[in-house]
Image (cartoon, rainbow over all chains, first blue to last red; front, side, top):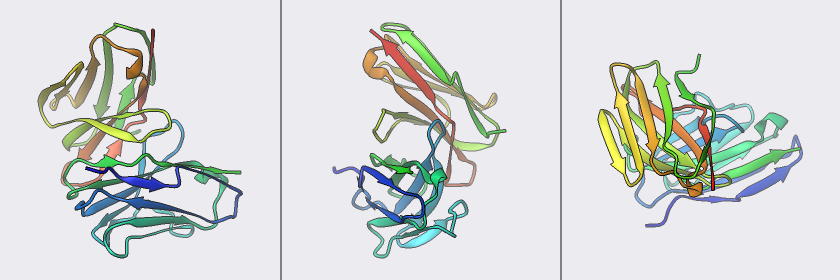
Length: 113
Length: 109
């Protein structure tokens, strides 16, 4: 079974630039999560999708972050414009349903200069 | 105060030592997860438990619901066990995971 795929693995940008991350969950997993993990911290949930609908985006900084999962499969997370404090690893995870074990992708390490 | 606290933050051990990592939480939970994160890599789920004890190879996880405490033990530690171990809880009635800050384990040969 293929795992959760994410790209790119690494990204370096300057502040005020835009960046997008892509995630392809495990086939058949209805629930998809985007997490932000700042160095030395545990992951923080940014947004949770159930199929193509948003379940929870309470911690998503909506003035600069956006995410979509148009067809209920893969998802894109965008930051526009980026700030220095956005430097982090962005993790995507998926689960069969929200109450099942989550499977994590390898993450995208973002550095904002 | 964080809802999930782990100790220690950093742990260095010699190969073969018995390792214990602790997790305390302050909220009602439906389940607790132990996760492993290697440098530059993603996160791998080790255990999901809601009571008692689970064992997988050299790893053992226990939980005491009354005391709101869980421990992850590694027997006969090996350098390849070096990673960050993260405790996360599912708050009662919620699908969301609340994560601890992680414990960085280094096992020296």
